[in-house]
Length: 428
Image 1: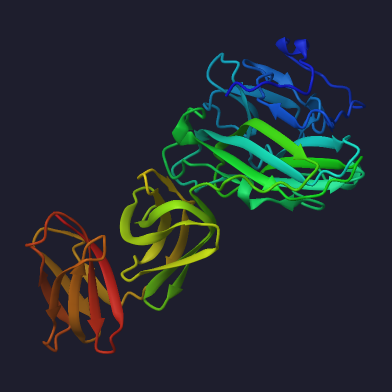
Image 2: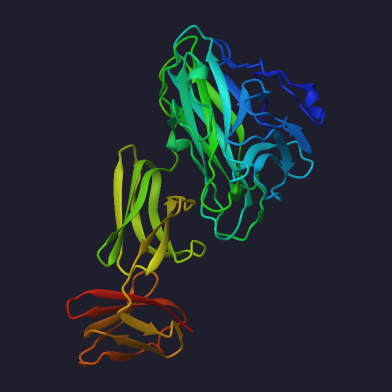
């Protein structure tokens, strides 16, 4: 967390309660021929109290914040505050800071912008971006996963590129550098953004051309998302530029390019794609009814080490009714693992067959408006544990589940047209 700020002079006045920057001072970070990198750890942001940071002005040379609502304040925060605004996140009294915000209806949206100018005398052909995304607060238990997106623009005139947070004109988004807050659908409260489970290192090589004298504009965007926003921040930024095309660094164990889900009849099909893999052992597909508690429902073998694009498919044969949440647990050959982002879909099921009680010790009762011909019970991993033919021309059945161990199961019913009906229950 303690990187050096090498390309701009330290501003001693930051020890004061307020910092005012002249509106005429629009400095940029020079991309020089001798110094090919810039680092920023944000540790000169206020560690206590408040400071003034006006819209579009620079707190540090080349570093500005833009807001969609009129405000001028940045506040030191440990993650306790739940009011929309611009924040200097960090532990109480610590000089280790991160730049973050809480977007909201009243506070609006935010972008954290960096302005570079190519002073090398040559065209810059590759720019590597590396930073740490941190989460310092969970808003509430009904808020889904939120994100900070990353964008760049190349121009001879910075004034021609929109700096309004709600306007993306002139900007190009970089999905590989999007930070997904790791904690969501949990009780609201502060987090330690420096803890490993609350942060992520993002790194990507931009294969772009910045002509001599041109400007490279970078920004992180904190949009006002569904529900109250979580407290997200950026820290330890390193920008490195090269006059020649540089290959991207060795990929992370798995570079996930796509992850989605779709309804296929009575089933749910999950599809994902990797752009590259390094010592990838396997994926565990996990599912949740509420986005909080996940359980594995299947395993898909990985492709080891490859630089080729690989497509994967997994079918959830007994999906839940209503909203289902899915994520991938990617496991390396050394048994370390990481999680993908969480996706969800809604599967509507007609209430033509009723199964009750949902929590039982002995029997399930089934009532139906149609003839059923077969039933079976599967566990969370899709293993079939009970199976029975329903020959009676009855519209009501009692199913004995007393021999099952305590746990969560799915009852699958097949009607005369082989249409599948599923219901989840808990055996005590």
